[in-house]
Image (tube, rainbow over all chains, first blue to last red; front, side, top):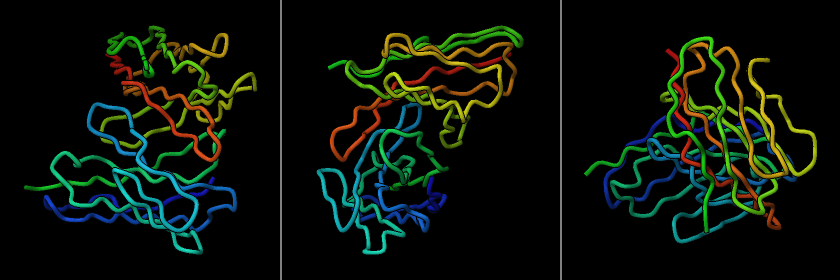
Length: 109
Length: 115
């Protein structure tokens, strides 16, 4: 399983764009990149998944360079309610998944 | 539709007692996962079930931990002779492979406190 590295914490202000980068140097050819969000006292929630280039949905964008050794989760115009822990995962479906420590995002007013 | 449910939501037990935690996955989801999360920490993988295949038990921390999944649906995680270090939130997730996506849906968790 490919190991991921992401910042432990980040601070931002309401209305700003937040970019969280995840490194996964040992990503395998078949691996997808998936991001989850976790609020206190809740289970994680799927945000976005991609394989290469750029993926966008109503919540976030995911940028993946050609070498796929890293990825960046972009949250546009964050609000206080985006304060959460964000996890980057690398792997394929149908196997165990490894969540790292995640990135704690604090959004300030 | 109904999401993943877990019971009980909270469990307080004395050291040395056995506990059973239950997970009801989303109907039709073939994969089921158990994780453990200690306060302020990330998720620790425990066990994974996929259809009728043998489960991946590589994350179980000791032989006091076991899990089963009956009829490809409901799962029970059993912890025998509980220890204080077993105190954590136990999360269950289920997923269904849909082409190139395999989003995991998590339950609310069971908070276990061993006194």
